[in-house]
Image (cartoon, rainbow, N blue to C red; front, top):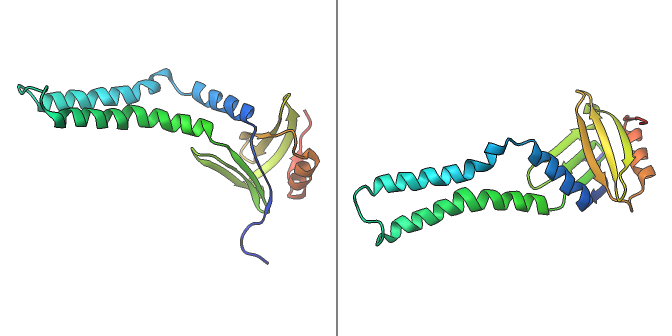
Length: 166
């Protein structure tokens, strides 16, 4: 027997579903967390000004280079990473030993022993696979309309997951 899990089915989540998931994730973050990069940048600039106490800053190129790098590191980089995470595709893979959701921001992989049930619902231009874990957590996965839902149901029920009807 092959020691590595076999890939049974893979797809990319529909863009419309990923955008909604991203908006839901951002809505759970407190408003003041969005100000942390600017606060960090401001703290670095204040620290640099304290270092230059009493000395003219206009002609000091090193000061402005430090301000530029701190702006890049504390403001531009965090927001560009969020944009990059939102714009990249989310890959779903059904393995012979579990299911995985792979994103830029992090992966979610569960073996079939940790999963309990699933349901598939239609949401207009795409379908949504809801997976319940043994611990009662729910995870949503987008399915493009061109994918065969019967094949997904077969693969999940074959590995011991119960189909829930809504």
